[in-house]
Length: 350
Image (cartoon, rainbow, N blue to C red; front, side):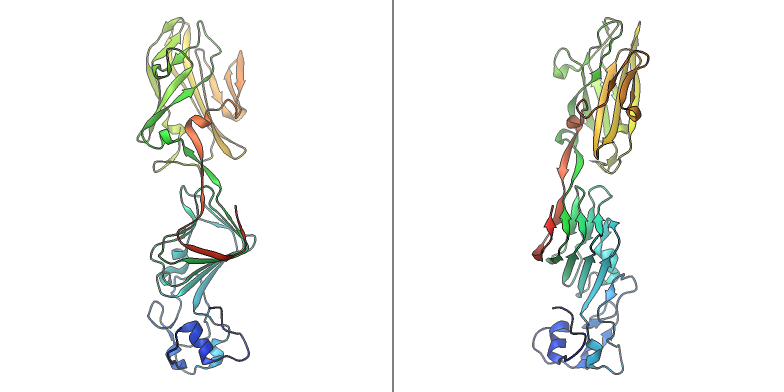
């Protein structure tokens, strides 16, 4: 039911249809505004309800007339007029969220609700929501690879408007690293020392230029079984690189977009040293990882897009020589989760 007329003829039947429903007889005295959180047909707004009372002129006592009901609706409404992140209808409507009273959220044109926290929602409806729930989206609700609107209630949210729901994508670990597991990491570099630059893990054959990246809990470790320096095998070794993988809980923290290097010397023999460099950096909105190794002093330098053996040579960091696909994948977000009626929505799902 939409709001009652704001002028002109208005009947008791109109008022009953909006505020009571059914066909039982009513009188205006039964429609005095009750206290917040009570069981009155018309209720006052809770002090922590940030919404608007759509029946503001109905009195709690004294004279009550048909004109008090002009333009009124049995509902609380909240309008987003500026862009926000990680919103909750329960926070917006406070103590009134659980009550059997209509709640309407409107996202204005030009306004975006989006996600900034890992695996959060642009707009969340917790499970205890009561009454009819309406969402008018004339702006944009962007899941940013997570969740757009997350309806955990048992009520179907009625969606109207002409805005946009965007699913988006997020960076997530490849399946082997979402819990305990391991992947092969291939290096670039290998500019050479006194001998060949070979370093490898026996899980991937008897030669090569690689290591094994293992996740155990929230610890990430590179390991190898062969490490050539100055014509000799220095043997197995490992390196903790957990700081290169920001986490939120156990998930990859895709909101952490900082660039980072880790340069480590993991061995020395005679004329050679074994250096390993790891870098991460966002390029055109996507997080990339690079892994380099050499048996002479060498540094990963993502700020200058290079893996450099000072005074001799360097490799330029590009998306093509990254190892992103070994550690990360794109995960799609969801525009809406839960029960929705979008038959009246004339906007766009992206």
